[in-house]
Length: 273
Image 1 (cartoon, rainbow, N blue to C red):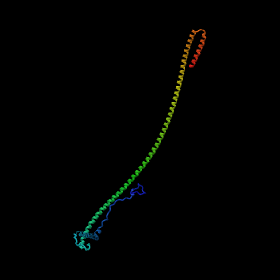
Image 2: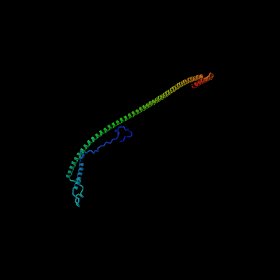
Image 3: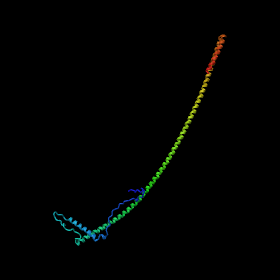
Image 4: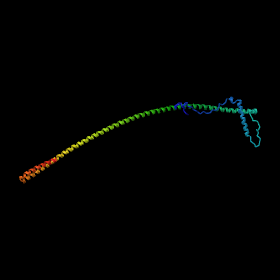
């Protein structure tokens, strides 16, 4: 069953066309006046006469080349029979009519009760269908409302998660920026500390080299003085020996030689410094 185009799917389904099966009912049985009237009884007796003639002709044995007994005779009817025979057939017809009318009335009563019961069942079924349709409509409306609420909730959840994601991304960006800044400051501080340490190391090395040079100079001076003193003592000793061995004439040359040796010793000391 389709839904008309001008009705929504939630429209009351009781407005839809329904086809309920119904049992076919025969006509109402006739009254006693109609069933037992002279005309009705005579029609029923005529049928009995025709049936009796058919049965009689069927019960007569057939003999080959034997003339048919009823050939050429006029058809037998109720009117052509004697009065006694007519009464007999009419009694049988009345008995059959009574039996038939009784059965027809019983049949009518059964069909009437069945029709009432069917009508009641159909009414109950229609009421149940209407109630069922209303329940289904209410259920559809409830489900649609739930779907709408679920969609709205999902939309709110998506918006909330979207906002939360943006906040997290912003927090992450701020944290990364702060982390980079801290790393840069730390790197700069380490670089400055390294430069300061390198400068201090260079200064320490310079001071150490200066002290070493001073110590070396002092050591050379001390060695030169010691050497000069030794040389001077050796020269004096040699001069004294020369003085003792040589004459006074050669004393003047010794003085010159002594003076030359002293000047040479001074020059050597100056060169060592």
